[in-house]
Amino acid sequence: MSEPPSTNEYMNGGSIRAAAPSLTEEDVETLDALVTSLAATRRGIAAFQAMEAQLLRAANALALQRVDGSRGDGDLPIREVAAEIGAALRVSDRTVQRQLGQAQILTESFAATHDALAAGRISRAHAMVIVEAGQRIEDAETRAAYESTALVVAERESATRLKGFAKLTAERLLPRTLDERHREAATGRRIDVNDLDDGMSELRLCAASPLVHGIHDRLTQQATAVRAAEPADNRSMDELRADLLCDMALTGDPAAHAPAELLGGIRAEVCLSVPVTSLAGVGDAAAMLDGTQPIDTAAALQLVGAAPGWDRVLTHPVTGAVLAVDRYRPGADLRRYLRAIDQRCRFPGCMIPARRCDLDHIRDAAYGGPTEEGNLTDKCRRHHVLKHHTAWRSEKSRDGTIVWTGPTGRRYPDHTPSRVAFIPAPEPPPPF
Image: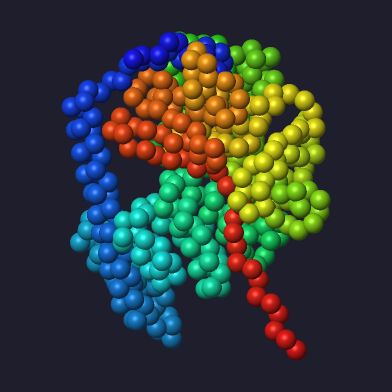
């Protein structure tokens, strides 16, 4: 039975009309078989990728045996082996040489991750996220603790969602604080130009994360405003962001795209999670930008100090579950509460920040669904529409988990993002 029009919120107003499921019973059976086969195929691919890593590691070991520093041959033996493999596989030998090193790190320093890949429990993308975030941890025991923690998340979340968790977990285990490393890294901020083909060039900015994320967010908001003001404009969001940045950098204001009062008043918005101990000046736990990128305490405190208002999120000290949210300035309390809990779209694997999502009623308001925390969740426009126009359905459990049911009847849980990362306790000092 189709549902009546929904009264769920949109970011810019409007409503979503429900539609009958688009798949017949025969279609669902076919899709179910395809999903089963695809999942098995992906597990097989992961196993072969783990096997490939072992072979590359063996090739790298063969090359390293022939490296002799006294001869001054540098990495020539490795290049020699990489060139042979590259020629045989029709791949750049530079690419192969990079893969040789990656395979050695994965199989030797992250053996548990390699085992999970071989068993098909994670994908190669998950493995690379774990390795890239954790390879700076030099102590083997600490690295193993990080790896086991990251694998728990990797086996239930997408590689994209794993990235922020892995970064933060690794940051907390490094011997030097993020503040110390950020001060050193900040001296390398720069802008580079890389010339491409077809009359194009690439401008690359290396700067503090809050600034870069803020620039991208402001451009996204302005691009959205241009689309709303000029419906006939068929440029993609990427094209609009690029054009707006060029316009502002060259003229000071995006005057070529819309009246200055329309786009000039848009300010960047980022979501910042700061441990209360860091706010109090006790400890140096890293803050998180949009739930994905650790930033230094000084930048976090500057953003907090300049904010017109901010949310205080009280979490359980063990589970990380959000217990309460308040704010020092009044406003849309319920929306802030949901944003604090959800952080991003609650469809499995989606990373659209909650501030850019629709607030959706799990049980339609037209059917008497209440406008309260237990019946609301953040969904990006794509997945909001998916829920209302297809056979996909969602429900919310008491612990905040959103369980999605696909057309085949498979259930996919999306767990509430945790704000706690468990790290090993430091070893006690040896007795005198």
